[in-house]
Length: 119
Image 1 (cartoon, one colour):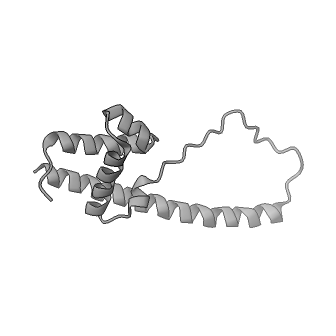
Image 2: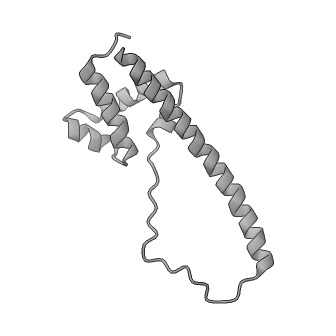
Image 3: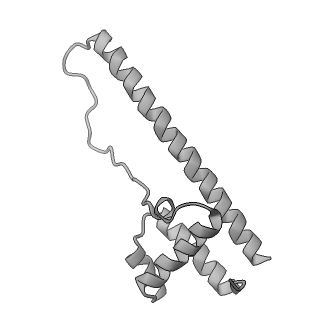
């Protein structure tokens, strides 16, 4: 593959940044006046160079909204059940943290590749 020009590198970086901000492929394409298939293909090329799956790169970030929720308990807490559920929650949290670490490592690899392409 030929070394991409500076404009292409900037667009690829912008694609990744916008996608991380929650923009969909069609929204990114519209922003750059490109077809969604070009954006999808370019993101796939970045994933291939980074050694990650296209799916992991194209996963949309999850944005939680906890506004308006009431977390005040309305009845006494069963401490045994609380400890059991807390253990389960901690196990799930550990699994999610491993995914986050992997995503960060993948992003660092992508950034390194983009920097190498600029050279």
